[in-house]
Length: 345
Image (cartoon, rainbow, N blue to C red; front, side):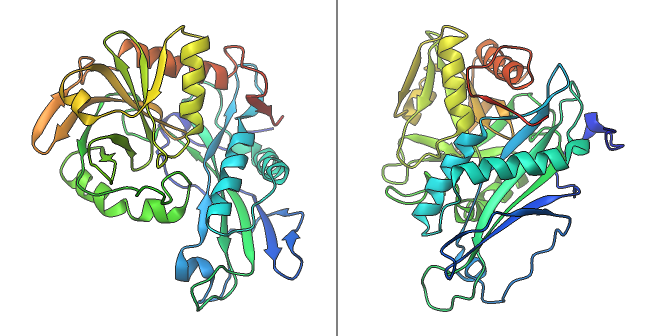
């Protein structure tokens, strides 16, 4: 199989149309999802009154395909993405796509677009975007009757420019998610509300926003698109815990890596921003599918800068070990826990 002629090492994190996508449909009349199929057509045709356009009834996922050191194409824990989308769909009254169908769809679309999977060692990956949305007309406030499940792929470079260099973030006054809301599911509406805050942050020179809990504004939640991790002065990995934080698959994997590969103690608990101001943590990073880990070097708290001990020059030692170990597992350089790697070809 001949790879596409792209400058793999200099790809940005942007959409590039690939050859195939997967499409399945659910109708109220059938009461189930059809078996789905690959198509070359990247256009979606729907009513102007489609449920997704009127009431934002949509959930999505994000995962990646990699070329391993020995030349195989694999995906990382797609069953967990499938389960998270299943749970997200239930919250928005969307008929959930069966886990097995989700994984099968991912397998088929990556296999069909194998020429677009970046070569090993380039730092690029094939990003996979599964999503479900209400497609039938809805004018009253209620769930749609019919839905479409699609998966497309696109080759991407690092999410943050400069790769794993420390970034400068700020604490925002906007709220990300309310208690008992939708912060713990991957719904498009959660990301729409973060757009104004991120545009404003970028205009002011920050890479991201840190959101505090909406109820008390004292505890750290996450950023607009990633979970947050800390390393304290005793080399413990401290993971913010809240019912309104998205259950990141990368975060859960890093927790396992910390405990079982690096011998770190892990403390998953509510984390108060006061602890950051008081200097309790020497390293901090954002984690997610897109960034893996992106280190935070400095946090701006309403005009006051808090500089982590790891600084703005390079990623701290523990975040570096965590990132390199997880990437080693994903890319086949280290032995993976059972069930983590789904081989495509």
